[in-house]
Every structure is written in structure tokens, then in C-alpha cells.
Length: 297
Image 1 (cartoon, rainbow, N blue to C red):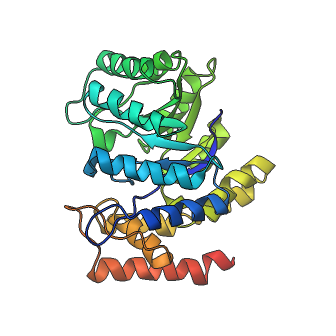
Image 2: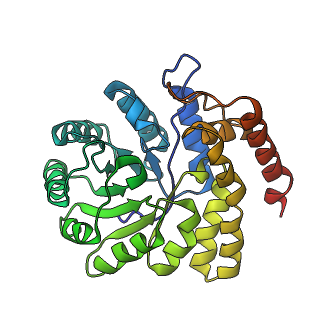
């Protein structure tokens, strides 16, 4: 199974009481699949994996896997600080039918590159599922170096990386050092989707696709047809949504945007609070701008 294309970094729908909203999780899964996305990425940073306990993670993954029902691959985040904890959760996700795993680097402790290689190798030994590395140094305090990725790309079931460093140079280096391997590099920063594709990447794990999957997909589909001008126009259309992310703690803005747009994904998990006041007004204006102007272009 070669994973490629546009894969939404799905938010986790919650009720007002802070529990997993199974009904809306299924609704959002269907909305995304019916839009034509190439996979679902759940329990990443925008999915608030770091704020959910194991039972909640399993419930979210189970809902999405059941609802997807084989229509697209489901990539489940099982990353954590302890190698043992990641192995345990990865086995549980494999048992309920996940198609692939995403494993973020450990955080808080910032291990050395040698330590992180051992971490990933041990996880890979304990699952038969394909593994996507996940690099997001602004949140974890550590960066996967190109040489480390080149080493891990030789592990048979480590099949790719999602890079959310925001640095195109990083993506370019990952592509260069893994050219000889069957290894996939995904943009994890939505402003770099087209640049990544043009450099030899295979797609994007995109947060903006929660609200506007059609626009994100048109970047990929236009690029595939060789219509770079159209792809560039679609890439630019993501900016008004991305510009609002500064108005709240991640992922409060994205969740509110998706809710105002039409799918009631609910609040973020505490301690992150829901948007209100000026921040809420700005998000409402942005969603209205998409509906009235951008989507009619």
C-alpha cells in the first residue's frame, strides 16, 4: 500500500462535556472521504493526541476505521515519550484495523539522534504496519536530521515522513537522502504543499483540509495534470484560513472554523479554551469570505 496524495490531519470532535463525539467523528470522516481525500490522518497534533487518554484514542480510531470501511487508508498517531508506551498503543491500533501508524518524535526530553533511531527501530520491530515518521520540532524540541531519516528509511516498514518543521529545506533534504529507497515525504505545513510536490514529495498531511478539502485537493489534482498555474492559485486560497491560526491556541481556531463552516466538531480539549470575542469574529469573517468569495471563484 503506497500512501500518497492529500490526507487531512483530522481534528477530534468532542462534546461540550469533553468526551469523544462519535456521531460527529463519523460525520467528519464521511465529509472528508466524500470530498475525495486519499486517506485520513488521525490523532496528530490537530487531533489533540497529547490531551487524550488511551481509551479515548482507541474510540476515535475505531470510529474512523469503521466509518472509512476500507474506502481510504487510515493512519493513526501512536506517538509518545516512552518507547514501551508507543509499542503498546501501536499493537492496539493494529488490532482494531489501522492501515498505518504515524509516530511523532519523543518530546520534552529531546533525545539524541542515536536514541531516536533505536526508539523507531524498536517500534517498527513490534508492528507489521507501515510507519510514517513525524517531525515537528516547534512542538517537540527536537528535529529529525536528514542522516537519521536516511538510516530509518532502510527499515522495511518505515515508509515515509510527515515534516511539519515549516522549513522547505528540511523537506528537500529528506527527499534527497531517501531517493534510493521506497520512501514517501509529505508536507506537514500547508503553505508548502505545491513546493513539496514539485520537489519530489508525494503529498501532504493537511490541517486545512478539515474545512476546505476541495481546495487542498485541487492543489494536488492540478499538479498531477501538470497545470501548475491552477495549482498555485489553489495553494494561495489556503492563506486566509492559515492567517487566522494565530488567534488562538492550537487547534482552537481550526476547530471553530470547521464548526462555523458546518460540522459541529465541538470545543478543544481543556486546558485549551474555545474562541470568543474578537478572535471568534475574525474566524466567522474568514469562513464567510470563503463561502461568498473563494469557493465561488
